[in-house]
Amino acid sequence: MIRSLLLASLLALSALPAAGAAEYVRVPGGAFRSVLAQEGGARAVEVPAFRMRATPVTNAEFLAFVRRAPRWRRDRVAALFASPGYLSRWAGASTLGAGAPPNQPATRVSWFAARAYCASEGARLPRWIEWEYAAAADATRRDARSDAAWQAQALARLTAAFGAAPAEVGGDAPNLYGLHDMRTLVWEWVDDYAALFVNSDARQPGEAALLGLCGGAALAFADRSDYALLMRVAALAALAPADGADNVGFRCVQDIEGVKHP
Amino acid sequence: MTAMRRMLVRCAALLLAAAGAAAAAPPPGDSLYQTALALQDQQGRRFDFAALRGRPLLVSVFYASCHSACPLTIETIARARRAAGAGAPDVLMVSFDPAHDDVAALAAMAAMHRVDAAHWRLARPERGDVEAFAATLGVAYRPRGDGDFSHNVVIALLDADGRIVARSSRLGEPDAAFVAAVRRLAAAR
Image (cartoon, rainbow over all chains, first blue to last red; front, side, top):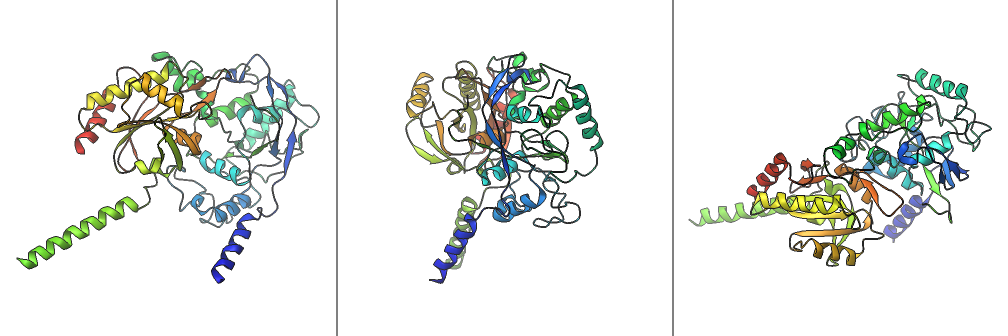
């Protein structure tokens, strides 16, 4: 009796959403020209609509997650899914401490852990094309990338953030879709980041294909003017999926029912 | 004499218990068997990836409608096994295109390449995160929109506990260092 009560209350607890469920905003679909040649490059591709977290996942949110899913605690996580240094900004396995303010983005998180977190919100990591598309907007325009001043500002804020601990999330004005921190705060994991560096000719055997697999040859940019964005791609390229980094956080997206993906 | 025998029996019991504990203990943190993956092979056999633990294994990923790299991967693995000789590890190839690769497609592929079901399993994931599984091998893939995928090729040799002891991306004539690693594990069995 007591056991079944206990079980029932445990089940009820696990069914509860995380405190202060995350805000997701709708990003309408549209045609978009990626800077990456692999994503269509010179020609525009159609990006289907999706819902995206308004802010990156914070330390407090990630802490709540590891309490619900202790296999992702830094003292229990399998080495396969997290390199040494995972969550090492935190004071302890389940305490944040002074080095990791609750409202700062969770960083030093592996791609595996970020995927698991998103799954816990019924979401997934964005694909590169979704992230790039959403990040192209400023406060009034869906695609502000041709504005050199806007690009320069993004780069200046990004380089100013080097070496410093990230600022709190939500500190900037939202973009057109209601998304904060897209171009400034931290770099963000995307679901298909490793596949961005797979040469489209990798099916061909031989030396050329192997060169492509090493990354360099496969990194083809259709547009090199957006330096801040290129740095972001290069930073992700350097990471293995079990790695984390000081300035790499993440946010999640949810599919919209009835929206078809190519 | 009796005391000696009793001691031997006790030793045997201890050894057996230790062996049992090793099999039941969770896999090491860096073991690929940390990944939960429910699979079904070309003969329709259902099994958990982690159930393959206990013996060395050659692992790769593929998709059945891939006509150049994937057949070459199978050929390369077959060559590595032949070069390793008797006791060469069994093979698991996991499809990352389960929407198209049903049991019939896997069976057709097995027949085309004449792989022996006693040693080769061409499998489709039924549950679990096959993209994360591929990532643990160092494989990334993305759909090209025409039913094909861009992907890199990795053949991994796992020890009995699922740790990667050697990896190769070379197709055709297998990498000599990789074959040597396969041979070492085969000889140790």
